[in-house]
Image (cartoon, rainbow, N blue to C red; front, side, top):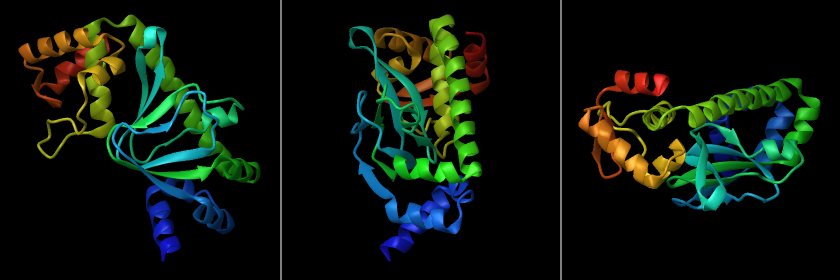
Length: 232
């Protein structure tokens, strides 16, 4: 019964990879995959750890971070269901250069990377899947580096809000972001100090672009926010 339930989870949530596997490879994934639950802010892996698993986010939200100069943390990437992560370092034959932790209570699947490597060696379709994933992530990282270093503070914060919207969407009211972030996290996503993030967010409130209630942010003028994000 447990095996059947796990196969159902994999078949529904990991359909993009599942469709590229033959029956034997699917059997191996079901037999070797583990499902883990993480509490809010719980560490999934840390910078310097040796990569062991291909992680797939099934439910919840995950952030990838890196500690910089003076202990400042930069949010590198937000993970949404169903996205895969934690495998680049293994392919590069190095330790993790960033950390991953849960934004909120989350459920993740973990497949041994040694199994993934063996399947890739015999399955060109699976190999192309990871080539495409890595290529998209690299392109996104290049764009983000330019935006974080060249945009003004307003543009960076507007972009952060749009990234949250594009990743997680709205609540049922069609306006409130479906993620509740501390100001520090919002600053870390925007590459600015927490005080600057608070001041800029207050400016957006005054301009009636957003409405803020604690950690809840309601976007009231998405078009203008996207314009600020684009032209910074």
